[in-house]
Structures are given as structure tokens and as C-alpha cells.
Amino acid sequence: MDNFIVTRTATTKTYSNLWLYQSLTTSFRSVIDPYWYQVKTSGANHRQFVRRGALIQWLLTRELALTQPLIDEGFYTTQRLRGTYQTVSHNDISVFNDLPNVIATTKVISKGQYTLAKIIKQYNIIQIHFADPNTKRQIFDYDSINETMG
Image 1 (cartoon, rainbow, N blue to C red):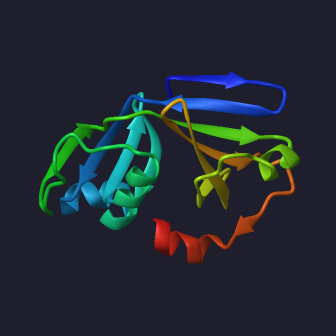
Image 2 (cartoon, rainbow, N blue to C red):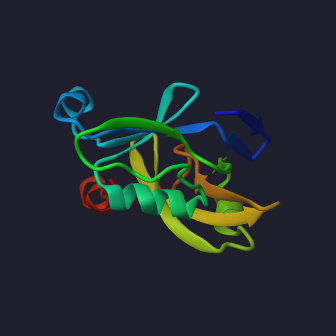
């Protein structure tokens, strides 16, 4: 995470130093099972994926790009991801519900729960907005969502 801004109703985090770790050998996969792909920021885990398609969808949703092609099974590699995106966690559910200029919706993991997220593009940066866990937010079944998004 590069920086974050806290206001009275929301916390904004900016991510631009993202790296993809592709672990496709059996020995590496056994260490981080079951994830084939890990996105890290400043050396810390940011998001993990079992399926290539889920990784690609996550990148596209945030307008992030690979800097080299994904490799085939049997190798380990890292690459920097090109692009910047922000997350905005709202502690006022009415502000979240009334967000203007929403271009799409998705689901995100927040505090171990899948919840609704709204996507906005502001100042040419994708923002992923979601309600804080302390609000009465919409929660989705983890297992069914994880099968499609993991």
C-alpha cells in the first residue's frame, strides 16, 4: 500500500506498487497451497488466486496490467503490475448506498467476508468502494463466491 487517507466517513487506500508472484511448480505450490498466484504490495500479501481466470478478471476490474505474459506450469516468476487503483471503505452505509457515477459492481473480500463493491473511475483511477464491516452491509456466501472469484 502506498498511502491512505482517512476522513470522517471513509478510508481511502492507494495501491500502485503491486507485484505478481506466480508459483506454478509443485514444490512452490505446496508451500502456499492452494494458490497459484499471489499479488503483493511492499512484500505483504494483497490478494491470492487459485485460478488464472480469476486473476485476469481482478486485474481487468482494476485496470491493472501485466508487464510480461503469464508463464506455463512448471516455473516460478515475479513481475511488477502496471497501474494504480484505490479502495474506499465507507463507515456510513447511506453514503455508500448513494454513490454517484458507479460504472459497475463486484464483490470484494473485507475482513474475511465477501461484500458488495461499487466501482467508480475518478481522476483516471479506478476506485473500489465498499461498506465498512461495522455497517449493516450486504454479505455473500463465502464458499459459493470463492469458487468463482478465487
